[in-house]
Length: 411
Image 1 (cartoon, helix red, strand yellow):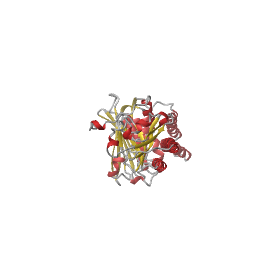
Image 2 (tube, helix red, strand yellow; image 1 turned 180 degrees about the vertical axis):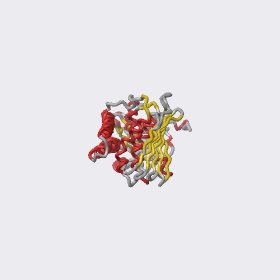
Image 3 (tube, rainbow, N blue to C red; image 1 turned 60 degrees about the vertical axis):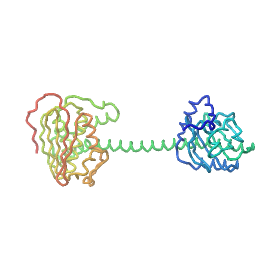
Image 4 (cartoon, one colour; image 1 turned 90 degrees about the vertical axis):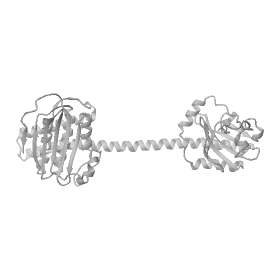
């Protein structure tokens, strides 16, 4: 609602560098914040030093005068054209004293003078940014006309400088908190990175060690063991390339999922023998379009998990084409997963309650899902506690290669 004709304020002129002044003000992120004790103390000191019933710490934005701290008045917004502090920020020397507002042509028709709170006296000193541009003012007010001695004017100046210092300290503390938050985030990312690296390196290293032990015990022929160790070493080198950035993120080519699954099963074979786990493989020629290294990483995780969670049980791995997709299914007779936990199973660091007695980081399945998503595929899971788990990885096919070759059957 517009003020009556006899209550028309004289708006303060805009500072010459108003755009930059506003930018400085917004950079402090002080507007619309909660009360803070240091600013409250500044307002209280201003009232006590100057002997006035009212005092405020105000900031002037584009449309309003906003109050950060106040003594004996409401903490509110005032339209810029009616407020006193917009005049202070353009006053010579940054100080304005109005001894009797009814005798001042700028304020004699101001609704804040003619009506509640009936301001008659005002004195303010500008709060400045580090650039020197005025942002607002520390001010004192009264219902009665009065003069302000020069020592009290200087005290107002000192309090406005203190408000500036508090603004700078507040911005510094905010920056430090942001820095601490960033450092904490980096720590979390470092811990996550370490977990991922440890997880991805564990399978091929375990395979190398397992085949080495089989060689030492003369429980496997040399050529078979060396071929397996060579495959695991290649996997480790690819992981090193990933870490150093020497490998592209994804390199799509024609891949036989059946062969990738066979290699992953061979990688897990020493762990399967150690845990008395029986493999059943049905691996058909299953052409897809994908990154062989990433798909191997996914199947290493799935088959390795199946072996780990099914001690003295059976792991069945089946690869086959279906429609326009290649499918690998890994089923185990292990501990299973509660149905209520299945929706979270692919969340990073989540571990099912039935897996707590087994070592792990909760990284692997999140990695598998990311690889499936990157290929335009999907990963599904079915499980029942005590009966086992089935994972189904589907990847888009890569053309019409042979699909009817005899499966590889292994016990």
